[in-house]
Image (tube, rainbow, N blue to C red; front, side):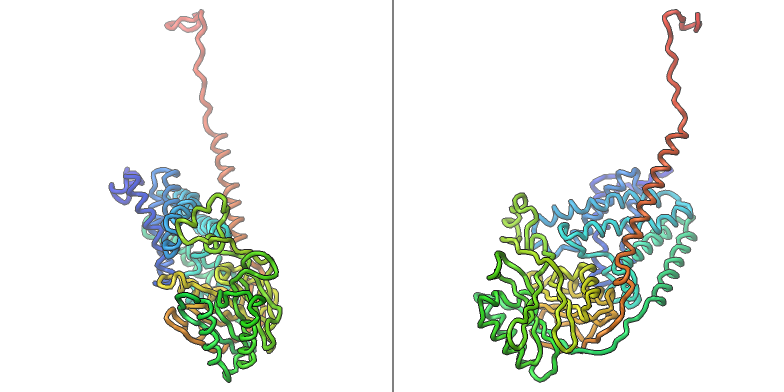
Length: 528
């Protein structure tokens, strides 16, 4: 009988070669995300990785395949961070890749050999649940946050966005992995193809039912929101130059009936209390345009110690008092975790020289015209719970202020802009994603794009007609229920595996100890 580790040929017998293949297989899902944005590829992207893990000769080797695949996945999805973090990104990917080691073991446990229909049915629940556990753990802000969740690759697929309103990005990740499991069985085990097809049909039926049942956002009004994107501003005194360009672009909005004007992240590099001249200039713009202006201040505050990133609302008479301080900071970009131990990262890449301070609570701002907005800053749009809480607190429109200037010629701007589509669909609230240098975008309450993107080569001010929707989506009402369901599945698996181990131990034949010969017994004639 052919050994399982030879299923891909003798070349993979070498652990080093096999490890390289695992890392490359784990990197494949990157093609489903922007910029390539091959969303359809997500449904088969895990198949090579799973085929490798199921063929592992031992559970330990399958765990290594999972680990190295996770390393390849994280390195590929975050490759645009290499110019900033250099070798440190490799270290982070190697550490966090270990989260996929148990998942690799589970792939072998349920798909090795010729799995029975029962095992395939269990795999369709267990393997997606195991993947969600990995996504849940790495979504913690201190471990880098939920960038590159598999379900977020479906940001431009209308049926997927409908499902996001039911179970968030977590439900999409679960379904994508489930399809990959069924396809893996179809291509690898001829005898088990019928159960795999049945699993695909069941997944499609459940997805279709959720798609039909999920309520559609009810649009009951519109507001006009302007996005000001100044573009790249380099050289000395770039803060003053950027402000002047934003000022010029905002004046182009006079007479266009905007209800709100949004500037990007770090659009003002000075505390407005320290620079009352800038506050007066923004207030003048507000009067001329006839709308409040949401700016973003990245500066040391005058009323408390430390540097903050803050969304500040400015009206015709100056700052209104509505302010939101960013709560979830970018690891290494805005603070260095355990700086006493990892501070050396500042000498290797472009890590933050000084930690920024965190805000303490989310804020919903009333900008007039009956409009309430929920601001988020940059990295925070990756967290579905933040937009969900803003919707619960009464935000009519979600607003993100961002800047990916450091990664201008990478896949990062497109990936970041795509996240707003999911946040809009999950909450049933339109979302405005305004940046300094692109990509800026606006999405309706169903996650569909409104107008065109402002790309990384644009320096412009554009007004969007943004629909307002009422009602509460199932995701906002019930929260991360797919994650809770996955936790129950994994808990049931642990109980089942523990019971099985006890049963095996109890039914194993007792090993009889060899009889001890006494000094009176003869080897030839026992008992004599």
